[in-house]
Length: 420
View 1 (tube, rainbow, N blue to C red):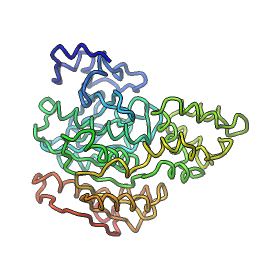
View 2 (cartoon, helix red, strand yellow):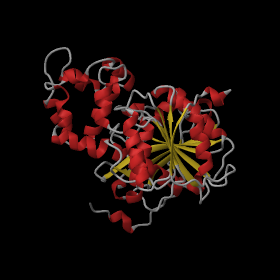
View 3 (tube, helix red, strand yellow):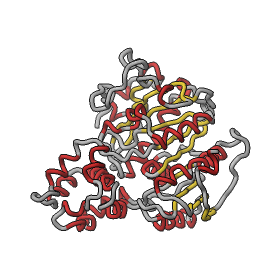
View 4 (cartoon, rainbow, N blue to C red):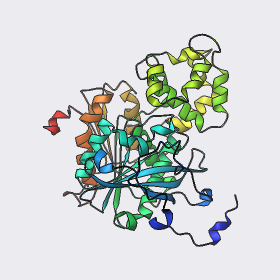
């Protein structure tokens, strides 16, 4: 790839990246599939990872949608796909009403989709109950919030490498614009995510040392993380959220050219569950596919059931890009939380990964909640996660986090313990 434009000076300032057409904070938000702004500019592939490519004030009235947000920006930035080839993504920066310029929290939303118009930079305007509650808590604390569309333009849900790299590069992009966005040059930064958002966060933590060794995350809180894509697909099939398994299969194969076509060759051509219905679902929203696949045994779409999961082609993809625990050990402090009765992914798989991290010298507090299921833990663990995150922003919110080693314990924690 020839990048002759590197010979010319490159302007990284905010205003050099905002065109008159971009400055549209009062306009109605447009779905990404229809919004020309979601198009990478000429020469973007030659930029370093984390380079801002486009910036605009987020359209619409963000303060009416997210309590505690004074304003917001959309930032398109250069990142990498699962093969470490050039890709791009978009993130949204929420600016608190009383900002603390020294604290940036990258909050990875669990948007779990195969559909571009379900990306957080757009769906934030429709309100997402659990996430909105977390944002409000964080914004009240004065933290800037980074909300990356970490699945990228291909909406590769479950593809951990590209999700992790896009998360890292979203922070890189915002830090490079710190002066223009109101962040301190020495701002601390941390990550938080639940479920699919925890997946992106944990992949970022595993890949950070090799991909972005110059970065120093203050900490990471992860809740309800799905460890193994193969287990998730198998366990979700036949349950109400079976549509998530469909989106994960799409997301993982989308990063590997030709694998989707190979998958289709293994599908039935006749009967009520066949290749036509499967491929049509790719064009539909997450809500629509949730309805289509609810309680369906997805193995019935395939001539040999889920045997394909264990073929070399797919097992390699699902291990390399869909299984945590083999790409590195987090170098930042970690707070992990999960319901023991989590039905989306067995807690034993997270137990195993945490034990491995601890063996490799990680700094972890891991709390296993004796009450609740996957959905409930998203609320039950929110306050403990926020309190922990505040502690890692050194000196900003009182005491400084100085714990080392691993602590693993069972707790009985309810949202009502903190919300009254």
